[in-house]
Image (tube, rainbow, N blue to C red; front, side, top):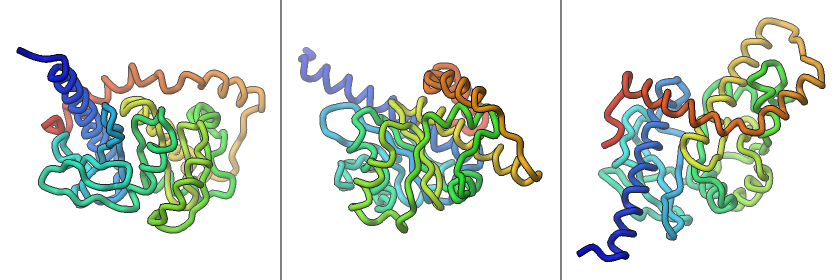
Length: 252
């Protein structure tokens, strides 16, 4: 006979496996798009349930190798709660991700990259410019955080979450990009738009002087961007189909 407690535990395990599968897929999609940086940078997701645990990659696996079962479960202090064959996690990754998960209850997932175009725009004096429709869709969602060195200092967490505020995208100056959303599909969708905007800007600026749209057009596009995260309902199933055709095997 299944008790209510047993059923609740089964439901939590099922919910956790769904998050694990989505996060593993996101890691492999990052590799597929060429945004990875060997074994560095991280994507994380909150584990469903009351324990304030989250999932992050084991330090040492390439992103295209990540599977649902290889993800490491850690608590808000960075202590490993559950792991597969590899249990080491990157302390710098913990600093950044724990800051957002602890400071933003709505942050079900957090993604951080060192992809060249994102780093280039983060190092540009003016940051992300409204040079494309994609960039203009990002601007209202974007914040900035100044570089303080490799993120090993736990004191930086307070400043990082202060700078993120209620935004879903961040340029970490001289460092890279970060996105946060309610779940993995939404957070990856924000990541795609931000990375695409940075890629376009780098290419546009390499061609010579750039042309800016009117302030009215910029504001109109910003107003139209409020539901940008909702695009995940269309983008994520398509991305999973792409991944299943290119690099299956993540859901194990």
